[in-house]
Image (cartoon, rainbow, N blue to C red; front, side, top):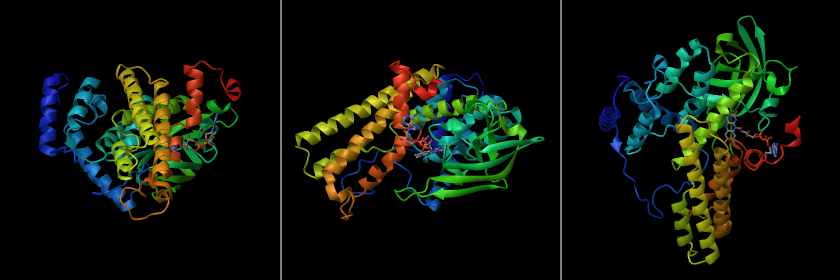
Length: 408
Ligand SMILES: Cc1cc2nc3c(=O)[nH]c(=O)nc-3n(C[C@H](O)[C@H](O)[C@H](O)COP(=O)(O)OP(=O)(O)OC[C@H]3O[C@@H](n4cnc5c(N)ncnc54)[C@H](O)[C@@H]3O)c2cc1C
């Protein structure tokens, strides 16, 4: 695609590509009792279903990349199109009108790992991984959290010890979403145990199929197994796969975490964020004969209003990102608003369904809500826990004094 293509010509060729390769999206209005009644937050697919979804996503990603509509804003030398964000927005708006496969397997790789590689990796690593990541040939995961390091990420213990041109990594990561499907991972390791905790970390790109890497699925209480424990036993990583400076990993981690908030926010702004199923909730209330109950109506109104507040706050943050600014506390506010709203949904569903939330009576659209209620704690943890987000809002928005431990 020519670098100087006008927006009009770009849209014209994007539409031609979409019309030739996808069907227009038809919004099926589902009636009560018809089709699947699933309202889960976390993915609940079997491994076979996940693999089938990935195969479909990969076929679409490859076709889209080869036509020049995947990494529209990326640098040309690494496989991007070198165009501005306006072109990306135009393409996204056009693609939204077509039925395309779910791309969730690529969310972490493209939303968080690829931007970090672009910002901090050597040219060798950029050349080796950015194109296959964006073409969907490979999947990437984020190897940050450990059994003793989640909110306090800087206290992580996985060690990387230098051995000539390589690093030897030993330790354990946990809650690694999609590690079982990934070819590479972004790993944060301790390289100087004697330095203050934020100053002894280094980031790397690790080959998930290297000898010494063991991925063990973790089953969620809702039944699915979308994340894993990952064990590293003397895994060798070439120094060329280092991200940023030795002991400069905190800056690298912040790049990833900023992009994580933006990726979560982008999903929420476009109506995602865990299939809250507002329409389904309204129908549930109607079908259970509670639509005239003033307290239930009040709760429903609160849920709808707060859902809109979360998505508008996200749009504000997205607009900031689009002008090249860093996402600020808006992301924390909107994620917290979203999870608080999910709690309201859980409370309302529990009040309306009573024991049918925990005992399957076989009635369509009732017991299915148990997966939503049981998935909520995960949403309140992932991407910053409710309490950590409150700390951020307290300190950065309200100007309250920092936590005593953070003042040291
Ligand atoms: C669905 C899901 C997907 C995930 N995917 C990934 C992934 O792909 N890669 C990855 O690396 N990690 C992933 N995580 C892990 C996630 O980043 C951590 O769960 C999160 O950072 C919290 O860490 P923790 O679970 O260790 O809880 P902890 O940090 O131990 O927190 C426990 C409790 O203490 C509270 N708390 C902690 N510190 C403070 C404080 N200073 N002030 C007040 N309260 C505090 C917390 O709010 C929480 O309620 C995922 C988690 C979930 C739920």
